[in-house]
Image (cartoon, rainbow, N blue to C red; front, top):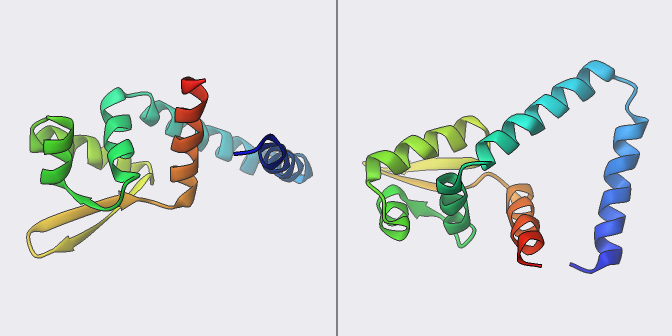
Length: 117
């Protein structure tokens, strides 16, 4: 991402936050963001999310990819789902997971890029 694009996005976010006069809503947004960062603070969950950046995966594919038991992966996926970071769909007995939206992808991409510098 070019610095001008990053600055533009940052400026837009700052403007939205400063224009908000609803302090209760702002507090709720801050709390939700903090909760998301807590969820993202686990390396296993980050590995799952990184795998989902490449597209939808079933639990078995995720477990094989990160070399963990399916039950452990399912437990982490529930936490990610409860945080609104992943979506799921059923196809018979198989459950497929994907990133919740483009914001999650962007958050992960920027985070990975940041630590790689």
